[in-house]
Image (tube, rainbow, N blue to C red; front, side, top):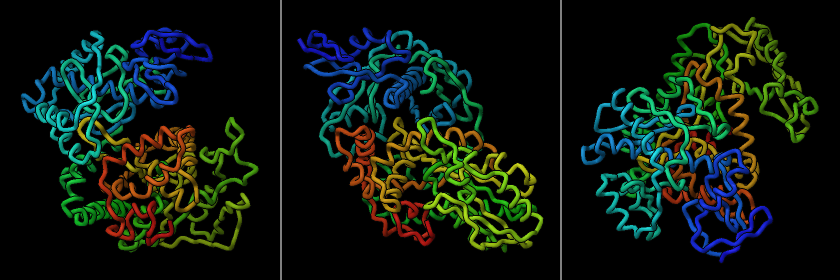
Length: 551
């Protein structure tokens, strides 16, 4: 009998015992639901069986891997509920996971009218599936056989994706006669989802599950209409170009049409930047354009391109970085671990910023500070600025949307812009690409190129970066006058060739290995594109290099 060591204590189990059975023994010691296990250094799903001796630890929904496993399973249940209520592909109906809005996942249903009555039936069926505790099984199929299964279920998006798969086999999950493929791990049965809400949202449905921070409570987010409209605009762009899934993008690359598509994508973004610039121009009192967004959103390239558009309207923009208003290093607030907290508002000299901006608004001549990141001191180097009639400041920094940052400035003098990399391209209908993955890959490549930082270091820092964004950026995004999505539908095919060598450098015994492995598996879906096709002012060049801007 296999001997399993848990928390230093060894115990024998019958061969064939599932990890779920072992997890049930230890669940009482954990506040959050166990979602998977780590066995001999490898992640294992609970439906798997014990076959040999080893060391085991538990992964709960509080952990990133466990949380994503729960979300993925919750989506599969929704897909099954929709099929059960509508008849699915037999009646020409399909469901697509589009993007997240707050704590919810927005999905569209094609082939039928989404009414409140239909959503109520889907919600009721969802609850029935949970109560039934239906098993979710996993089986390895030969690729051709899996493709045929998906073809019969009307999942042509998966058929198109798997055309480019190198492996001859694929893992397929089964729930009550329904087969699907998911990029990641799953829970062993439907009873593991304890709380949910399915509601009508615009023309689709919104699935809300518990958050990673609080797995016991369901928190339904407030509507985020500006973010939703921005995401839908990008989705419409993708549909217009004939690219909704990675398989569509790969087809375009392999057919030699990617060059034209890149130019169309860039033109669409430039048109949007021009619209924002025109809106600023029409607001005669605007003197401060405040740009904020999470890490690796392409803020610097966007600010440069916006400045060009402002100039084309007769305005004279001046770039200002909020980083120049950092307090001196010794005055920087500290995190609990003693490290510097550069993300919080208190890391900036808010009072001095407001004094300088107020004086500039009055037409006074002001000497602008410059922060020396080597010495950790703010310096005055004779950089004077005075605003004329057509002058406008383009201010970039993570706190740009926070009213506390510019409390003394009149509301009519400010124009706030939220920018982020909001990926709307999907792997297939049921496997969306997380916006955080796009930004993380951007940052891995840029940090290696401009700062000599390893992928290991960037990945290790990412949780603290994300925590800063959750506290200082996302709460203010709906207060923006305009939103800009910097994600480019082709960019992951370009970033792939730069990111893969960096990710492969992370060793198996390092804690960042599992995240690196996940990202490598994700990038394997894409056919590569050479960066020579990119315009020099492309936002993508801020990360892969070759930009005409100082980024």
